[in-house]
Amino acid sequence: MRIFNFNPAHGMSIDQYDSRNFVVAPVLAGVLTGARVHVAYLDPEGLIGRHPAGTDQLFLVVNGNGWVSGSDGHSVAIAAGQAAFWQAGEQHATTTDTGMSAVIIQSNELGQLLDKGGP
Figure 1 (spheres, one colour):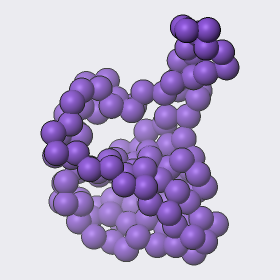
Figure 2 (spheres, rainbow, N blue to C red; figure 1 turned 90 degrees about the vertical axis):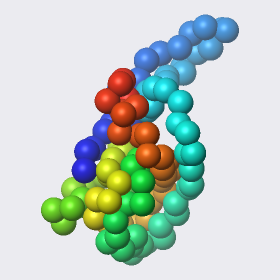
Figure 3 (spheres, helix red, strand yellow; figure 1 turned 45 degrees about the vertical axis):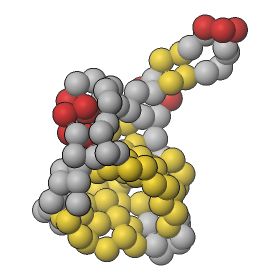
């Protein structure tokens, strides 16, 4: 498991087209074939039980906080503005005490794109 930051502190300010107070944080660079994108909503005391990732998976927390774990089962705190990456086949789980929302991106090509300029 790898943890990435995509909060505003890791982004860049954009002022083109008269934009202001606007920051973009990079996540992926490249094209994903067969990608799937979901939004996960975990209520307080929510749990995504331990299971193997079917493909490479990027779990971008956009609201709330909780814990994620990879194959070693060790829980790591995660909060809005951070993402966890699991490789295809890696056992993983997610839990929260207070609730959490995340965008989940899945593709067999994610690992390659993260290595080429992602978070």
